[in-house]
Length: 321
Image 1 (cartoon, rainbow, N blue to C red):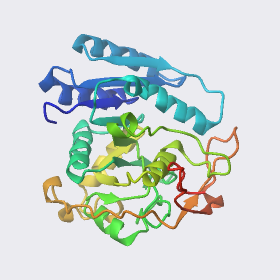
Image 2: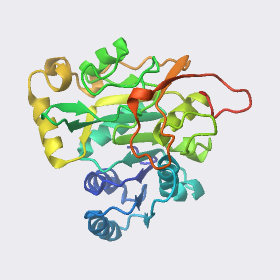
Image 3: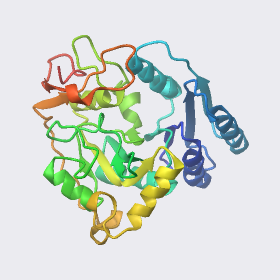
């Protein structure tokens, strides 16, 4: 990160978040970092971890905010509200920032997050995401976020390899090289701050008669509709939601064939990656897996429908539906 670049983080994952703050902030006396945390009423030890993290931020004199919000509305509207509340200081700031870094409650290496930021810069991406995994019942490592990850054919990713059905994208994945997608999240995401500060992009729930998709997918739809469609997945940035799953994930990556048959010898360093050739036109159709019931927590991926994508004159933030 150059001296004139600034990072803005909305980071629930306190372990990698602190490492990231230390790695990026130390060189510039922490003046180019802002940390925002919103905790949504967890019943585990999140509050204790956040309090300890806040003490570290105070000691480092890092500007930050910590908030707690309870649920009582549609899941997607609630999550969109939380993400916007976390970014509220950014929306109100006169300071210009370069990147928003979102970390879910995942285990991820800080160096991998830095790689994703550097990759975003090199590819001039509007948004970049990692890939998250979990252990299935039989101990098999499976891809987790198949609801939000959608490829350039408008299809959701898969739990098992090949994780993405778009052939060119899967070829890139096997080499751990970045590739373009329609939407993504994957536990870790970086987004150009100017999209929020200059272009007015916000997290949201679905409009009436629109697919009630995840707020993380809808922001991807809005980016395509506003011609900010350079959205990439960086498959080398891997995360998991428990320590045991992450240890298993890293051990699998040390095997000859890696995760999902990825040949380790084929993987290149980030400096050797082939540049992403971006597609500017959105897929003609996108699978809609809607979360319509206000009391529903999990989407039924067996009941997805085709959602035609189109540009609506005068309404830039609704490309599909």
